[in-house]
Image 1 (cartoon, rainbow, N blue to C red):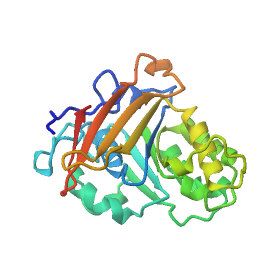
Image 2: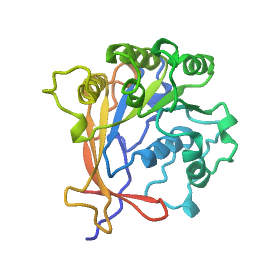
Image 3: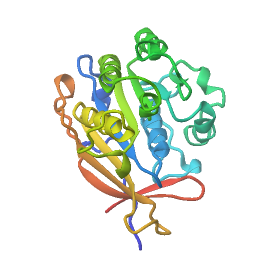
Image 4: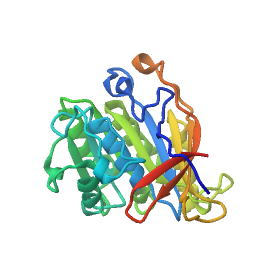
Length: 271
């Protein structure tokens, strides 16, 4: 099977994250990207971090062809704040040093902040206090990446409405990208027992989808992994439209095939 590599974009303009979205003073966006068992969205998180800071995208490139730009960690397009409920900083550290060209001590840089909440037990009304403080203190536009936040409310006594209210407040301060699981055994609209993991994750995803401008679904091949294809990426419009300075933006609805090779490089192809 042979495919021609394509540039990956979320918007009709051909961009991953447009400058107009970053610069908007009145509008804050929310994008949701989901993965399942057999796939991982961590490479897409790396893509977002690179694009938000440098304006470049390492997809269909390798480490030796890293594209430089006029932006840097000291002068980024957007400050990036990552809140992970799944991974510690060591998980991303090696990848980001390799693909983003940042120093291994980057986590001390205010323009690329990392909060490890993988073992967090604080009540939900206090959970995001340091994150909110970081967003409020920033002189630069901010983008927040939430890495699998469902792992908090699935293991703690917290209602989905309480958790969503925190996300809504954070979204009023910054653009938000949320990665979350969407395995078939976690999603069932007919589940009536509100105490089950399936009911809680279904409720969370439903409410998250209904406040998103775009949805990205990463899935394995239905026929299993091929040597030259790892899975599919589907980009869809969300339920909420773009407004104010971002009103002319349009989600690029598209389906791609993607390959993550042994070295961790990602290539994307039109399906």
